Length: 355
Image (tube, rainbow, N blue to C red; front, top):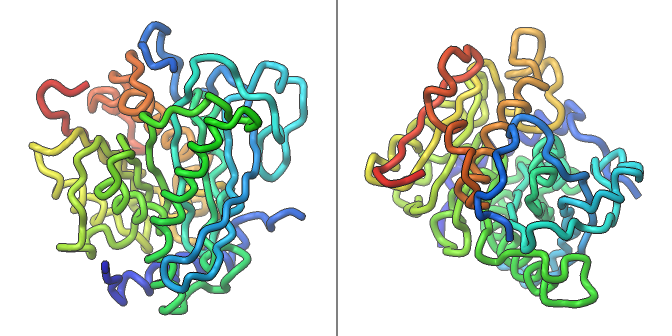
């Protein structure tokens, strides 16, 4: 069984405390892939309107056996008819819109939220990927959500979440793929079990690193501001799939130095791997809101809209290349493309023969 260090627990809790006390999240309300189409600018919204739905799954806790209710939010590319319908103000998509019938089955990107947060913490990212043809699936992690804990610093609860989170993600993936075989499902014949990516922020970034190294169904991974990536030490699982690591230069919960250390540890013989550093970004540059007073937020930090533009650009180019299998996006991932961009530092290691 993996063991979480006390230092990592404290930092996960502190990140949640800052987010919750600042009120940075809104309160909860009651096929393709053949490279035939030219690349769409990954920094801009894609061609699809965004649909969003909620599916609830229930599984037994890994630690206690008690039921965990996983009210999962799913963003997806919708049919053009959704363009005429209003979007939900919280979830930023058209509720239960008809999915697109183009390029089926669609690639999937799982998203794991941060400590004390919610599945809808980064709608700028989830809806952007959906507009580019991905189905983005974000379950909650009961006991470690916005409505469960304030300030989410209790050691036993954090350890329990650490042990349950990966199973939350894989259980929801299993259940969702089963829906693709159900004629009564919104996603009937729409999901590609062979093109599944993993992503997450903060605690969810740590989930991403762990699952990318342990579950062969994930063929690409993106970890945002993952605390403790270096603290995993010998417990870190080797990652053999393409991975992008993101961090902020002003992040005091998941210091950029740790992202750099993890990136370097993959080595030149590893899979394609990328490091995007937002030099004046902080821990909450990767969420919808970054309120002044938090580290990496405010007038001296990277503008939030600019941070989101950069994250969306690189995330979309990465998943289009290594998950969707579409050509034309590789150039956005080359270090030369980042030359002269003073907002970022960017590194890429591409073993010979890789895209």
